[in-house]
Picture (tube, one colour):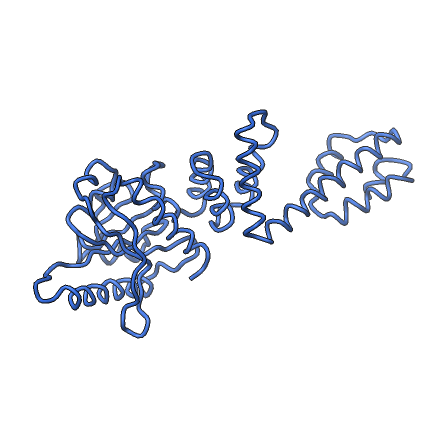
Length: 297
């Protein structure tokens, strides 16, 4: 299982009990004895009465003592094969529970598939019924099989475990919204593991720069520390970004001291250049160039 999946599962584990005020908690699943058939996890429902006031899909868990959760993050398959495998894991868990509980257990194991969107093939073949924003009952299981389309869910604190499955622009929107609402450690995990756009990732990280608020500055520094400790790739990108920024600044200083003026177009060209070697070449040329255009050749 990849790191994005681990992050999404950890979010469910950390957020569920707080959001539901103890009505439900996340539990890592035991291995099911069919070679290796294991769902992502399940919700153990302890206080169904506390779920009634939460937004959908939480109240749907009131009728059950356990709900199988399958997480499909951006880039994961949500085709029929992937869905059938998830349903097989749900069925295997039902068999496992029947063995554990004995003949008196006559319940049915529900499954919630959490993904960015409702796939077209499912809409065409399984007659999903929308009962709340982003929440669908899928036939023939109906109330036992819910599809949670995270891109359609509203941005709410009590839906964060589902919202991490968003993708594309919806994920970017969620990332901007949730960053100031969660701990630096959680935000660092989101920036590291979720497939948001690079521009939004940098916007969140650098958007807190230049503030005079010591609390926000400390938060930014903490996010940076966690990112650097968990992701060498992030550290390399930050170092490269810093070297590029320094090279641009040095180029501008040399041109200014040599009284070689930069036009608005020259400024845009320097700022748009993301190749460190090119900027350093311009810097070397600026030392002896007779004009700005010669320096920026």
